[in-house]
Image 1 (cartoon, rainbow over the protein chains, first blue to last red):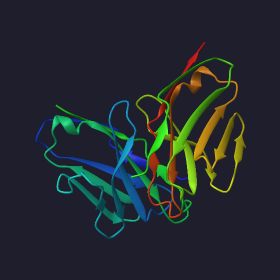
Image 2: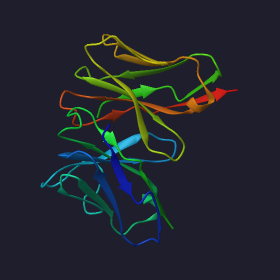
Image 3: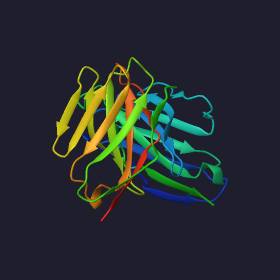
Image 4: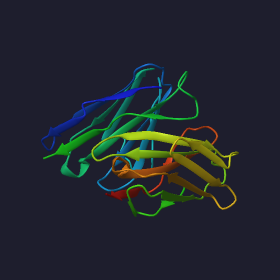
Amino acid sequence: GAVVSQHPSRVICKSGTSVKIECRSLDFQATTMFWYRQFPKQSLMLMATSNEGSKATYEQGVEKDKFLINHASLTLSTLTVTSAHPEDSSFYICSARGVGAGRDTQYFGPGTRLTVL
Amino acid sequence: GEDVEQSLFLSVREGDSSVINCTYTDSSSTYLYWYKQEPGAGLQLLTYIFSNMDMKQDQRLTVLLNKKDKHLSLRIADTQTGDSAIYFCAESTNTGNQFYFGTGTSLTVIP
């Protein structure tokens, strides 16, 4: 099956710093990648959708200047949490959809746990 | 967004069957999924069903879909302690472009 990786799997940072999370599709080309956020004991909430080579589409209530998304290639999307604060602590999960992986399903990464002190 | 609802908790004894239910509101849903999430881990796709199907069976897993009532269920036969996890249902439309996740059901298997 299609494999999606995330790096890092866990990160702890100080308040005010920026953190970059990578999402890679390892054996297929992802024309679309999605970023989700999951708070403890809650469901996944879609933050944004990114298509390769174009600007990401953010869901209502998600600050695009705070959560910078770049999808520069067909196998890599990055989420940068800028000026992180403790309330940004969460589990961030990406998923990828694209050519060769089954157009109408998404493959999820293992998630990145962000803790902001 | 669409509403996808699940009961929050389910406890079963080891060896019994578990049935996890999910209701959704989007009548244009084409694909319905079940994911498993173990503590601190990402999502594992268990199975999915197309909206033109009523049932899909895969080893211990049976998915039932009642499209009229917009009701989806996941039955796990001979539930084991390793099945303890949170189970999410999700749905997407024809484009498969956006998933709507349910609230998750925490399954506890009692030895």
